[in-house]
Image (tube, rainbow, N blue to C red; front, side, top):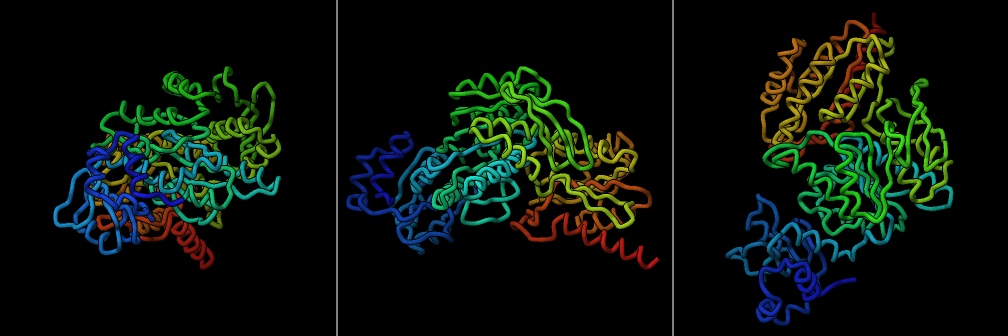
Length: 511
């Protein structure tokens, strides 16, 4: 339903966000209070007549507001007035909180219409989300329902559109649009990844999760523009338990006791673990069979067996989290088992092999210390005896700690390293690579810097002279690269691997 401006003011006042009293605003705005708001937007290009325009972001300029007015914006919301713009101003004390509440209000809290599962953690969010989606989809198909929704780092599917994602958790207005699409499509389940940034900067402030799962915590996203300290990072993630009905907690990992304590804010707590037998969902008996991972689990006292269609023992903990959520919803064991076996995660341990079998290329989104450690462990487990070549970079302008972390982990595990670009933003990718290299040098691991990622992949494949395992880390299936002037589209690591392996195979045919 549509709301009047007066409704928005009453809502914002209820959250203590108006920097002026409703009476003062009422006197200034007069009959405008009864104007219907057609849309809430922070993008001047998307404004339609009757829009409540939100001025947010450190880079916001008055020009954006003028453009919004030209397109028909009726009012603007900001922490300060902008001179020279003839448009009624509504002052708020916290623009991010005001945006989150306004977006949810605009779409009438659409997340109340389905079961919303939020997943947070340093590593494994995407894999767990895809596991859950596969389980939900098998279950929905068994009863004639619609495929479930997904909002992840890799892919967004909301029942109306399916497209690659640009960020782990969208900004509030885009997020509520996806929720509204899911409601309109009649979806029963939506699974989403929830980043620490989304929790810290109120992207999900006015969202209530039916279930929230906390997978693990490592040292990541520490930088002046993200989290100033690890404590701030952890505290931000723990906020998810203040916004859920049921909490799912991983026992036996670092800081699990703090997670469990914070989870007591929820009405119900479910635990999972592959190391702590006290967990409600306890995994054990892991074994590798070909490319599959077989394991057993005790689920609330019931012994069960599962198969993952993707390799890597580290994925079992993600599967246990998905099992815990599915058990909460009473999804039949057969559906859970079939979903996990079917589940595939784009850009996670994806394998491409040369015709002669000499070069095995693994594409994985691993991009922090914890995921790098798991990737190398899985690589050695799956392909023992091969020469390991790692190719990766680090993002510009954020998570500065990764440069040390990735360099050290790769240097300790790889036989050779190619340093290249990975979303450099405004930074010089060669300088980022040099910084990573400074942490590789003490280990003595040979490396070279090739800033162009396509050329780095081509070189790595061309130079393989013995049985080689080439790890292309950090980008997965992403086709967008963040540069100084925005995003630029290019081939994914998978595209490059297929092309240059085909070139390599063609050379074999010509020998």
